[in-house]
Length: 193
Image (cartoon, one colour):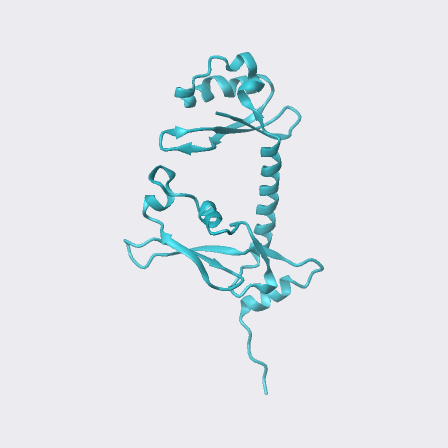
């Protein structure tokens, strides 16, 4: 009697778990369903159970754009009492997992933890810049960032200055974030708004 053949992904999963520490992957996996030119469905599945967690029409801005009442996938998970960043041991997955996803999961976790630490230590940018930011006009924030805030940080020795959206509503930003490398080479974050 011969032993039944196992799928390649199951063998890869078993091999990846042979180390001392269990290998982890993201529990929830996103895929798309595009059977024709008019359909673009987003489907989130649970690797632990193999079941669909939720799905939605990804082409409809009302499902994804905050300006139209939509919310991000992370917020959709939160509304369901789930965490989009949950991880599961590779050996417990019932859905196929590419071996490269184990490394990607570890990199994503490290980046997320670093960002959380940076955001916890973030300082108010306008207070930090003091008089250099006194003339900043919130109504024209884009111009103010490029002509006032970025140059003020660069004069203080910061490099790689970039701005990003924080909280927003249909009228625009409520808060903005800034990431930069300080003169000592450490990445830091600021916020304003």
